[in-house]
Image (cartoon, rainbow, N blue to C red):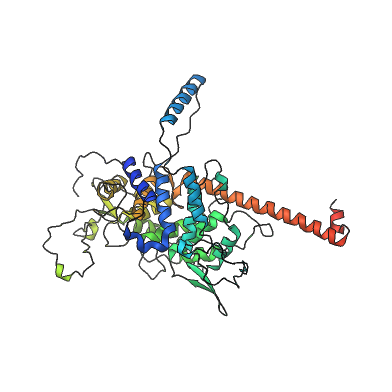
Length: 498
């Protein structure tokens, strides 16, 4: 392969990208997003997460002498006076958090759009929280993706002065009970659950590896270390069944799909890897390096998986707009011709990547064209396996910044495409997970900044502690009530010294 020409490396224009995301946050999105009305929670996550990636906190000060420390304090005061106001002011953060919490459903979980939110004045006194047997007519349905995005948003929008209160207002117990109902007998998860009179719970949604990942992430964010019998305890999902379902979905060529008989996909590979790592992820200090027994010992063909992921990289070719092979008469209206932009060798034995290539792209399946988001799905999957070194990162980075970054900011799906919030968010995410200077360091399994993961840990611990305190209060009231009704202390209380 030809060597890359001696050209300067591209630079990520932070200000331009921030202007794009500010426009997405403060202005109505273009009409093309109308078809995503049911996914407003996802759109909000893409926008808020991208802004968080682009705005890292000030670097922590290093130990120094008194004079040096005084000079640094003066510099910090001077820079603080010149510092721009936050892109999302505290009052807007509170307003956005209120919007997220308004999508919470009485039976657990969150809806993805305001169109499915319960009216605030509706009479839901007849709602039976555990079984849902008296569900209110016309009630909105929570779904798995919206719940994941809602929890991420609550952490991303946490009050800087009260990070432990990030999940305040959400019903942890009901959401975990709702999550348990979404699991099928084979260990997989659906997207929604509905009580059908006379038939029990119906789990809707296909057999999709993404739901398995979302379930594992929600469980990690909310469950905590509550033991059976303690206040706030909820029966856990079948973690062994979930792990077995994921592990049995590895295909003959090493990738992951919805089942071992289907075509593997890079997005599914990422979801399988991230889900397995979350099942035994520690609850505290989780962003530090930790081995995952479920992930590294469970996958049947780890070399095959790594080979399949690495093979998603290819030498990017510029589109040939003057090709005489295009037969426009065979392209139906509304369709776009997908011209191959990958390099096919004359012999299979010649299939390799040279580190001298200018641009390298990723696809999600064999023989598919470049798509910016697959740089994330492939790159993050390898990073989660500890093999990010197998990426031709300089060439992949050049592809993102030279070919996919738009002049107004953001990233498009294909070269030349306008930016959109999905590809824009994950374009930044892969840059962050690979250590791009000036970006917040990203957690590869939860797809939010590392600092946000620490907020999730604090918020979960606060919910668990609140449940324990409430349980202790209720227990004390029960004893007082029993004494008042019987008029004497019970024997066990006397023996305990009460």
